[in-house]
Image 1: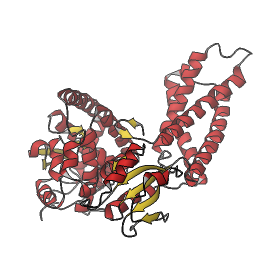
Image 2: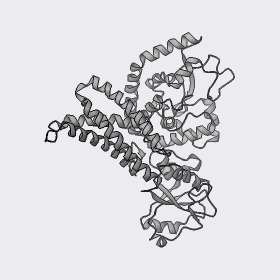
Image 3: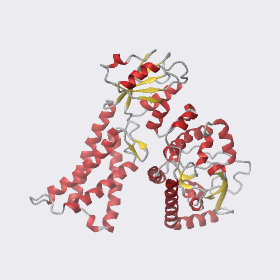
Length: 460
């Protein structure tokens, strides 16, 4: 399975994405050739390719921002076409702006709108065919799960609970029926000898997901499977690879000790710091009018300071003052620290707006410039919550071995959390980020954050 930006992506998904891009590109080139060719195939091929690449890039970005590359849930073709039309409509507006700024990139109106019709038809057919592949569960890998307990059910939910899964559970190995088995995969007490699988070409992977391995691991049989070319995979590693998070409750300290990752080289740290400073300065400069307007609105609406300073636990457990625009009344925590709630009545009218738009987070860029935070990393929490979460959540303290971030992998992958259970779920993503941290992954998080802010996902 290919790794892109330190994140695993199924080959089938990559082929779908690239194939759709090629389809848009060819639709533009063929339409342009049909209307403008005079017998020779493109005297100005370079500029036409550039124009076609521009349209393809913008249209695919819009498809991404409208969640049309998130195929975990079963979308109807009608719903897809509706959202696709909206995405392409936004794409046309963006292209209009680009064409006004850079006129030589503009396709002729006749070519563009003819190509637009061809693109809509071809992409609809392409997606209809791909949805059929997903529904028929074609091009999937058959797996055996050794275990039928809670751990095995957690993995089964990730395999069978999403529409675009590239895996299919063929068999469970264990003493009892698993809690989650929607496709009624067979259950066997023992792992069959590898010789009995020679005619069963569906079995391509074995996943070890035992709640307790003592005395029950079929070592000799697993060795035979391995020698015969069938991959054997630890359940925690498999779960990390397919979900982008680490299953904390099933994690053993030895897995962290012996696994790759969880370390930052001096070079990587320096590059990350340079990116933090340059992007923070750029964002502050670009958002200066918004910052000034927000400060004035906060001051006019209610008495008190414009900025809200709050102690948070940062790198190496050192406390620092995180800087935010004040979105609550000055006496919001007179009764002590509490988790933020949905429709929190402590939030002011201006506060509701700036929270929805994430404008209240912008002053944290000053924390980044001061070296207390990074643009990307685990979100900092207050000491009172940290002390409580360390007691109930294993490995929670590890997250303080990195600088906290203005945004993070957990923030773009999990909705806003305000409970101990949510903190556990977000820690799964934070540990994944710590294990796989790279500049490329940081850029992916920033890109996903832009989408989250534009569509106001998870704000509270």
